[in-house]
Amino acid sequence: MAIRAWRNSKGQHARNASGTPVNAVAPLMAPARMSIQATERLLIDTAQRIARQPAGWIVLVLHLSHMPAARPHHRRIARAILQDVAQRQDGKVFSVRNGDLVLLCRETTGLRSQQSGLEPQLLPATLERLLRIDSPDPVRLTSAWRADADPERLVSYATARLADGGAAAPAEEDPVCPTASIDLLANLAADPTSHDLMQRQTAVLLLTGRPRPGDAADGGALRPLFTELGYSIATIEARAGTDGLATADPYLFRHLATRLDQHLLGALATALGGHGPLDALRQRHGVPPLHLNLTLPTLLSDGFACLAAATQAAGVGLGAEIAYSEACGDPGGFARARAVLAESNVTLTLDGVSYLSLTLSQPWALGADLVKFDWSARLQGLGGEERLHLDAALARIGTHRLVLHQADSEAALRWGLGVGIRRFQGRHVDAMLAASRIVSCPKSDECTLRQCVERASAVALGGRAACRNHALLDSAAP
Picture 1 (cartoon, helix red, strand yellow):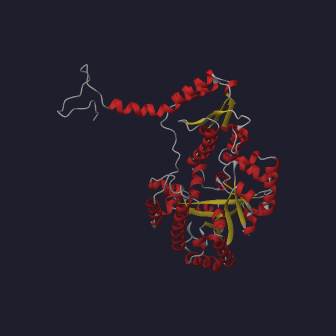
Picture 2: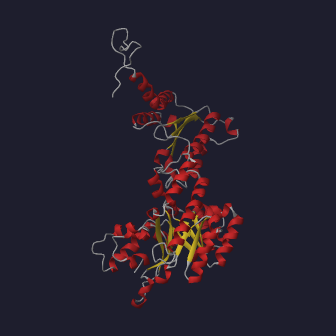
């Protein structure tokens, strides 16, 4: 029911001096609308004053609105840097609704240039270095100019921001994940029928040439290396209605991962010997070895010891993937887990090695069998000293131990092949495997590429039911 007017204590509509009923909703809503646009209006007023006397003013705009996935910490760090300069240079920082930050400050004089702290002229390069890992083209994130060189430019920018739609400026606080949400997510995975929350993905070795016709068992130009199995955090969060909260806090996420690991080990123990997607012994039937992404406490648990003993006794392969950040955070636990894996003949893979971690640390010193190197579009633009450092790090690891992870595009494969990497995992690889299955499968007349990709990633019976060639589906490649 709409509220049309406020009633006084006698139940009558309140009226103004002219006798017109007073609408109480309007004065409540108007300040809210005005507060949303207050920053933009103040920026326009300031820009117009500076345009009248532009001498000595510097303008810098940090276009966080151009970042595809700007996070709250980006705004906090950038705002702190800009605010520090503004306080020393008689300036002000404006936080605009679209996410941009605008710094207006006085040009550095000879006396001020001797003060400690970052100078306005150094801000673009500094901000670009800070944001380069999260932005494919950080150079475009900043605009800086002297107000007297273009007095109307700031006025035009501020006017455009006032015309922008949207609500208030983005929050500068990271989302908080309540511990109750972790319990909810873990309990969803505890359901014995929750196999639809799991997913699998196959990594491949891209051969240098196509084998002879008699070598068809090698899978043509694509030879499956292993199939990674685990819970899909995105699927669990979607079902729980807590999108993004599970990964907001790294410590709670690791706690959740440990709990999910226990459910995964329980499901594998139940499925052992059953020839289903969760059976770790199926390699005897021509499917790739199973890899599990597990935490250190899980690898040192009795449940994993039982699984490793079963696979070792059967003579089939098993792999364990450990997050690189966790291995560095607990060197003692990692050393114990590495010894356990070596004793059980389980392949050790370091997961989550980024470009920066590869150049700032020495992952090759941890003695892993394989290293998953995360693909980033930034790698294509590296040159000079950065490329030399990367090439040296890749050589230290050895390309025969590198898996280019998150290879979701043809560009990723082309770059990997260019540096000597021949092991890949990602959505583009999924599509390549699906295409090879459809071409060779005699029952694929009613299947699409997308359907084949989705069925290959499914663990639950419902996700695989429409496939009429499970043997080919599970072997990943013909």
